[in-house]
Amino acid sequence: MAGLSPAWGQGRSPKGVNGGGFYRFALGRMAVTVLSDGQSAPGPLLPNWGANPELQETFRRTLEENFLNPDATRNNFNPVLLDLGEARLLVDTGRGAAAGGRLLAHLELAGYAPEDITHVFLTHGHPDHIGGLVDGQGRPVFPRAAHLMGRVDLDYWLKNPTPAVERALLPLRDRIRPVEDGEEVLPGVRAVASYGHTPGHMSLEALSEGKKLFIFGDAAGHYLLSLRFPQAYLGFDMDKELVVRTRARLFQKVSEEKTLITAYHFPWPAVGHLRREGEGYTFVPVFFEF
Image (tube, rainbow, N blue to C red; front, side, top):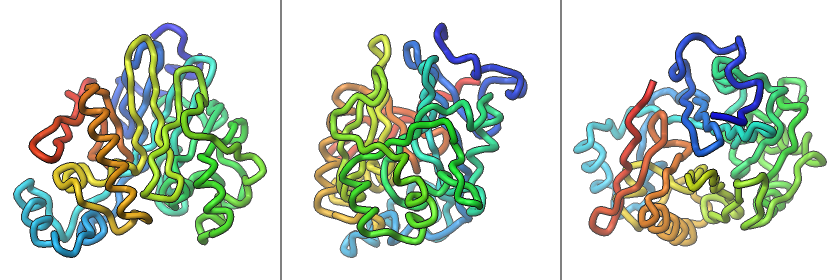
């Protein structure tokens, strides 16, 4: 992986390549590392992860047929680090240490320090994505990083702050640069509007030497229900009609183009492809490489 930053592979990383809360692979000349922020305690999947009232029994049956307990399943949180050598972009910051987030511990195991991060990109303003922006004293966790966020979502949360936004986003508001749909935030890394989950949710598309990765954030929803049922929406989706159209458009695109994808709440390590099956899709995870 010529061109990677000096930080990658230094003495902070233990023996072995993957494991310990991170999964690294090459994307052309980029190094991509999925960093687990941990998992939630077991909890019910319904109705939050499949909220359509008329489909509750169908959702429950589908989950059980796929060996998932509808009443007690853990949720994954998977930020992504793109290492371009001269720049290192972290996509989302997890829940924060005070909420049980493990991002910083796994970042260290992967061979990086917070000071190594040059850019932080926020897909949207929900607590499990912005919670790791600041420490307990309100100081930026990634002090050398430029902070980026879609203009539409940033404007919405600044005008409609939640407690999480007041704690984590507002202290950094003057450091966050708004990003537009289609903007190249770093060489080979482009912002893609994926509105609906929140008013201005943004995904990212990374391209290097002909290899492409689509980073969904929360635009993909649930790895089974959102893919299997085109009309499905989450209890967390703020615009249910729009998010269904957004998912249909993006699922079709990455499936037809056979693009590698990662999604924030998909099962670890949350990397794979989408395959069209009937009216829906199936997530086909990558073969795990050590």
